Image (cartoon, rainbow, N blue to C red; front, side):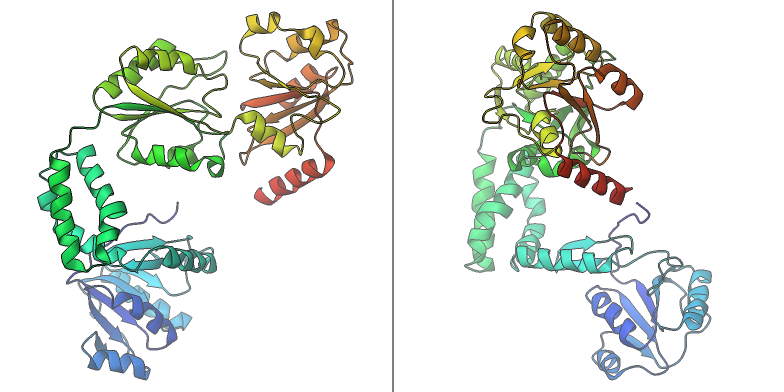
Length: 464
């Protein structure tokens, strides 16, 4: 992030602009929505600029910018559409202490002006670091269609009610009140005018003041394989409402970004064959925060019900009569098999698929390897890198064909995804040569489709 987004207070502040053509008009249409004192310097201003000055919306000086003209200004825009003149006025502005923006010159600008969706006092700023203005405008157009024009009215009335709403306890009770207002009661009332919205706020506050505190609750949420676009809508809602998020090591940073910024984030990273947070510690954290009244999200990689020790955690919260529910996620096997263009089952090949975990070596030893070694069988093996030689030995010992295809997908669904195509005979050797360090899914009995493999390689080249 080269440009840190902030909202600058402009009420009563000076903003100076040099320029009197189309570039100046484009900036001024946005700046005039603020409460700043705007001064414009333009030897030959276009008629529209003169009209704005006559209407008292800005102060127009029909001359070139000079030393002293930018003193005490917060922002300066160089919009003369002439590189030499823009450089001259920008140098004056910098010397006199203003932040400088030169139109269409990202390199020499101290700040950029984003595309803005205006539902005053709700303002949404969209920036692309100057890389893709067309994309920013497209996003703006999409948001303009989605956000009702009454949103600003609701926010303005709600802003005036904030001190009254402080009668509610800080934290979740207030958030629940405002959520109820903005997403339920408010939109219904605004159709009948502002007076109806005010009455609704009074009624809503009286209701929330008499409500019992919401009890603590645990949501066991499947975070999917890592791609935030594969997160379910229900999972996103749970993250948005969470007071505490207790997450695993494999949860991607992009998914963690979806949690509320005020939420307490607790990393309980578990690493196969490596450092781990004790399961008892995780259980204690769930109970501790839920008993304090928090809405807790236990965020697990993939699907919470697949090799996630979910039952142990449910038993822990059940023992303390804490409410809970499960939000399914896309398991890594589903994401990984999709990247190689295959399905886990196929008519005439295999009517069932085995899900194994290479982390449980004792479980491996007890597995029915004889049946898995038969032609056409398919297995999805989680965390199987370190046990690759054990898998190979057991299968070959029970008669498996050494040329049986094996595919290993590292970081499935993520930008750094890699695919290793090999055979049972070469699995340990090829895996060692590949030096895979990320989480990997191993498919016994499946090879990538050529088209899927080619498209994955093209996508990775484009991202590189």
